[in-house]
Length: 599
Image 1: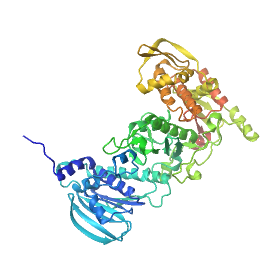
Image 2 (image 1 turned 90 degrees about the vertical axis):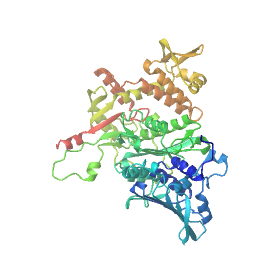
Image 3 (image 1 turned 90 degrees about the horizontal axis):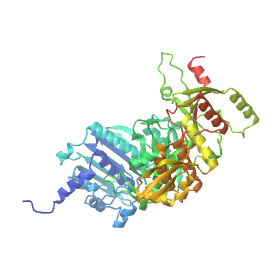
Image 4 (image 1 turned 135 degrees about the vertical axis):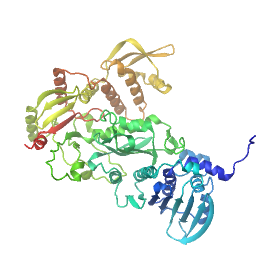
């Protein structure tokens, strides 16, 4: 019979290593985070055989004394926390006291370091957690950790390491996150004697994004920044036409720490409204900054998820910031490329040239959009408007009335040549304009028109339901339903309490019944922000939500008269984007068509 006994220290360290050393990338993560916490401005990383045989991390941080270096190899030692209360307000990354100790316990390691005021450094030779050699040397301030033969003394775990190529790819992905997150730190990354990334000489986050994602260009990137009392969110997102088929291009950092959390990714994507096709995902680099007291980073063994004290505030703030970036981007045009004439292959620049572009909006389209015409420039990037904005400004079919007489005459000539053509695929309205073929998204157009009508009325008419619908909301939503009842009824929803049930008895007149409950849930979520943001802004977002849910959908058939009426009102109101910032129309210019057909 096995009696209770205390495990030997060596066994404890190997068990702990199973939580820290989940792969070569996790070793790299711990070591690089320690370098960053040491104040390094340059971190050099080298791996061989995917990191299974060799990992080296060298930095120019504060370094350690010989005594501190010896102590750092013991379990549960750290310079990051001193009391349990420190865990509630962490501002460092590699605070886990067992990381260096456990990595050393399952590898052969060389730890070389020179302290801040010292001129003499120490190199410790470590085998399976035990110091087997020590020597002194003269060198520059900083620390170098070299890890050989990872998991050599736990062969059962070593065989679960992935192939060299997969381990190497995971290390590379980890380095990409560090490069994007810590834009004030230079990184040199070498893999099997080949330099993969070298950020020295890059001037801002945009350059780093383009280095990691070479398929993108500057015109694809939209900067954004939004700040409230509780949080700040800023970063870069791509245009809706620059996407991939998975979320690997979405990089979200909370207080500098990379997180992989569905709720945050979903909020990011919701910011695009319907601009993203199903199954497409944007490229994004998002920095969320909140008070460390308001976020718990210890709910996941590898800290890949976090828990917010006010999750709704963070999620809505992220969604709104992305929505604002899309709204400020402008409008679409399509560049039609002529077919190849054979012979020489196209150049790299020609092959990479996007066929769909945004054009900078040169004028405010209406009262609603004027506030958002200025793009707030993030404090963390060197922003060059000439480089970051699109290459030219397109003349639009819908022009404001404030332009010069010459432009008014041009507008009149354009409008005189406007001819309604029809509807394509139960989705797009086609119009001949003076510029070429104008394509209007009927859902986006209808959504914006409904939004404008709702803003004009301010109070939304209700329609009674023949059969009340029982609501089943979680406690937080139920509480808000009661607290915000007057505001909710202003939007056209009415409900009553019957015993322990909440019954929805009326909905906005223009809202389809099948969308009512889901829309009400979104309205309640939006109302959480009242008191945190301007009331007018919150109310506008509520109207946008109802307009979106009420607008005609893809597949809803419009007869010619309805489509023409929708287009005429769109032109009369001079609208360019839907309430969520998604473009309403595209233009295929006639000169592009002529060039394509060699006319």
